[in-house]
Length: 376
Ligand SMILES: C[S@@+](CC[C@H](N)C(=O)[O-])C[C@H]1O[C@@H](n2cnc3c(N)ncnc32)[C@H](O)[C@@H]1O
Image 1: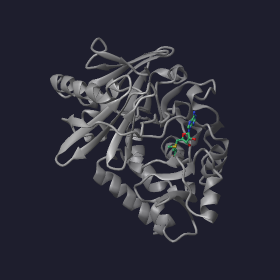
Image 2: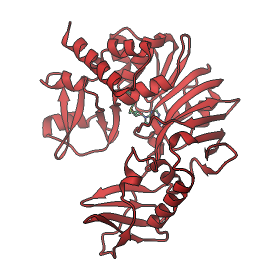
Image 3: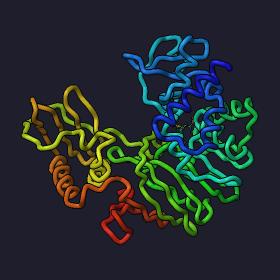
Image 4: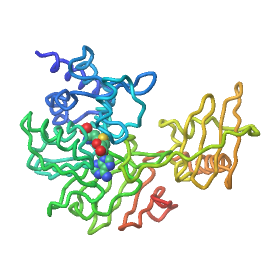
């Protein structure tokens, strides 16, 4: 048995142990598709940025089959890998990656594909997820689109290397893949601030769309059932996942002033808001649309483009906040927390979505219940 085969088996064992892989057909796909073909080079975090690794390096194969995300592009610039290789680690923001195998497994299972389904993937990236779809369904039924032509070209070649020829296009995935056919399933491996109406229009009524929501606080995985035209309804899934956003859906980090600030006591730790495993996180995000969070030394900062900002820090066993701008963000958080307790601490799976063209809302418990605009 080759080293790669052994490492793939170990990866599948890891996914089984994590409880994210249950379907025998997807197990076979993960066991069979050579992830290393799609990752001849990538970045790894280094103290001062991102270091370049390629298939000549000792740790390459082990890293390829590790359960982590592997970044392949920074700042939309595929040339930065060469720079990092020859000049040393480079700073940058990841703009393409092979996602964590665990979130890939979750999304592929949540897609509920059956033999004969035609699937559209938004976000080709390395092509590894495309290859898993081709393995499961046959490449004649797989369509994939990425906004970056270089990535699409490389993915197409690598897919061909292992015998797959799905329909690949370099285009804005927000427009879907207008091949003149309807898809049974759409899977988006980047996150969106709202569901592009084109996806709903290009999915057969009753077909499913699986994607993640791009919300700086309270993102999450959703599954939509397409209706007629650009309509649909769906649920926020209990199993969570985070992805880099579709290019046009990126958030800018808002500024927090550096001046001296007056601190006051706070009741809650910041983790209730920023920790992905916090049950409150999703509800908090509904009350803080457009608010971004960042860490700076010992404090965490929240900020909104309207100029509202706050800092939160631990002081001994207590917490403190400082706030400024037109709105008091921490007061909003504490009021939302009280309301959340009163509603019985709803987790993600109590929320759903109703979609009609650009008119898209998130609801609690039922479409007639409390609603929030998906994209305020
Ligand atoms: C997390 S990566 C996708 C991972 C990929 N499925 C894989 O297995 O390697 C997200 C991808 O979304 C792409 N992307 C960003 N904005 C896009 C858009 N508007 N349309 C299509 N693709 C987009 C990026 O270029 C990036 O390759």
